Image 1 (cartoon, one colour):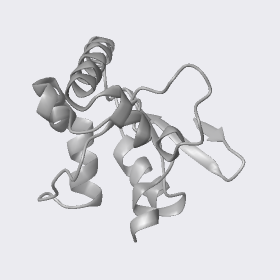
Image 2 (cartoon, one colour):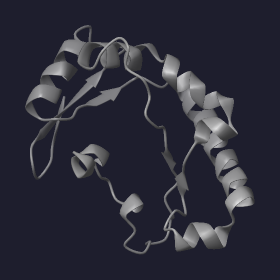
Image 3 (spheres, one colour):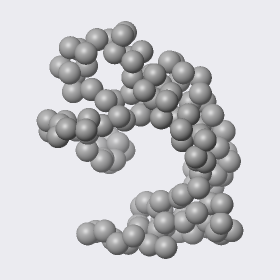
Image 4 (cartoon, helix red, strand yellow):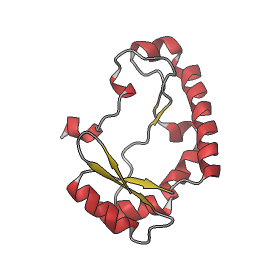
Length: 140
């Protein structure tokens, strides 16, 4: 399946049902620079993730404070989730994710960061973290 965007076609592949999902994803990364891989996280893990993210958000607010987060434009941005909840280590064990990293980077790759976003339901100010973006295009 492919999703048409204004810029290009984006490959969508299911790692549970498409036996060649990894090869298709690698090819899409080479040509389009992105792909959507579904089936990586099951419904139970997704529900646990939602609950854990809201828990992390509460802990960050307790530690940092709403005023400081607002001044920094970080409301809804969850940094250092692993520090606040060990559950997020399970994401590093997801077989499709590990397979993709091993195939496209290296089998010795390490996680640089893991952030979460809980976007506000009301229109937010023009805060960079509230928009879809690529981290590395700004740094490289």
